[in-house]
Length: 255
Image (cartoon, one colour):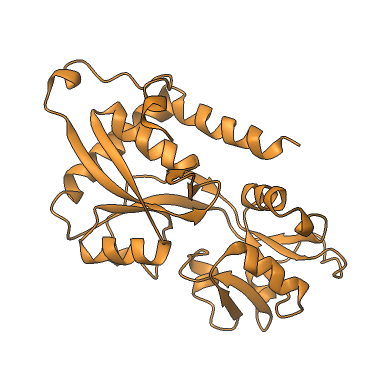
């Protein structure tokens, strides 16, 4: 999002006195390839969480600069303490102790289980994680899919570098299922219309929270985590967070 656009977002006025104080700044790692949550487009980070994180920090007088980074590297740098924080992260038992976590997720989402459109229809209620055991499931390298899925060694994971490649593996018969949220998939099919109409939802994973994960080692992380928590409370209360979500949902729903 262009910096001048930030000044036009509703509800982002600084609290009293903040404008007169010396501005605090922070550099946050923004996942570069998970549209519409966060992706590098037109040479800059764009997406739902880019706007949410920017708005949350701005609400408490912190100027956040987003640095587009591949997700695996972003999380590794945050864990090592060379980056303050990174998004978008699913909080799982496998990585719980590696990062410092906000008081609550930015929002909740749900991974859907996708299969080819002509695949047999599942039982009522659809497939769940246990139904994927022994099945080839295309997943994106470094992504967390929730503790239940990530902790199940009986699922055969076919790993790629991108959600689009996961769907194409299904078309090639190299995987039976893949996992992706609804909004990601709808926008992917808009960008890649040759994929549209070739897949269907056959189940879903449990809802998960999307977090900005903070470093346990970076010297700025504790201060910025506290600021982020306060800013998120503000934009969730004043309607800014809801407006950001609604704008992106409308974009995904548009023909």
